[in-house]
Length: 140
Ligand code: DQA
Image (cartoon, rainbow, N blue to C red; front, side):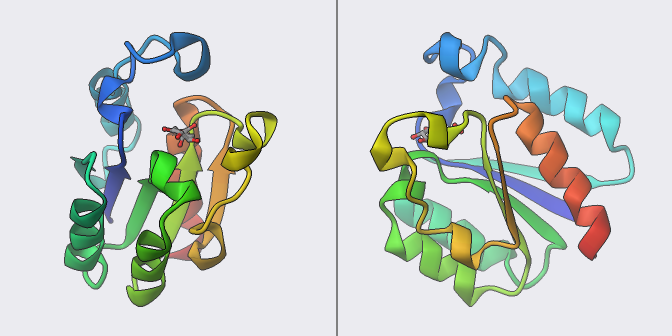
């Protein structure tokens, strides 16, 4: 199975950024653990702070990969273009958030992406990614 994790803006700062919300681990160190947990999955990782680059990556992998785990970060709450890209592709997308966005500011309660996603997992820290990956075993 070929899966890609796509992280949006500011998630390159995980481990340094607001650790009380996002924890102390860098994504790189968590990603190493994830790869060990799922030895039969071929993983690709992509992070960008640029909306158009995330859209280009969705187009690139979206007719070929078995699954996409997408944390579009702040673009979740603003980007019609990323939501349209998720709708346009064939590969199922699971939307992920580290924090429980519904327990935070009101502007984080809205996701443009959710209705075009296969499902949404949020609030479990970095393990939201692990739960999202497990969900692919059910629908591929
Ligand atoms: C986030 C939640 C977003 O509201 C925020 O803008 C992020 C990270 C999360 O993973 O909890 O950058 O997507």
